[in-house]
Length: 154
Image (cartoon, rainbow, N blue to C red):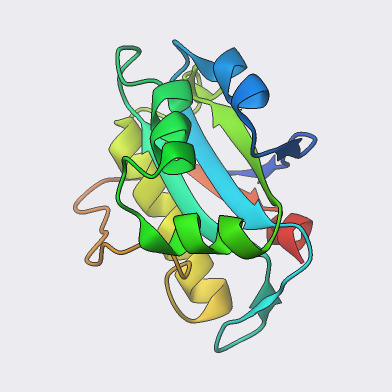
């Protein structure tokens, strides 16, 4: 029997400047994080957005704090993020995975795919600094229908 889907609005928290003191607070937390520019709007095929990257942490040992620190220091080898940071202040926001546990029955990797594919549907292509392709949520009956506030990044 198919689960009933319910619309769930996803709003983002206050932006934090992409600096080490703000990143430290996310040590030990798992979830999704979003890195974006202060002013520059990227021209995606369907519309503009300041969003550069959607990332995730699935383990407390490699938490959002660790992952963001890797992007900040350049250890993640994401040259796009490193170079955008050279020319402009960046910000980030995040979604703590614990907050969605009651409504999301799948892995955090699937949640990241959901967000990325929703971005592709609305903007026409992956966020400019997401290098991967082929994100898919395969053979899953999703019981949540997220309405993501992408305008946050406009």
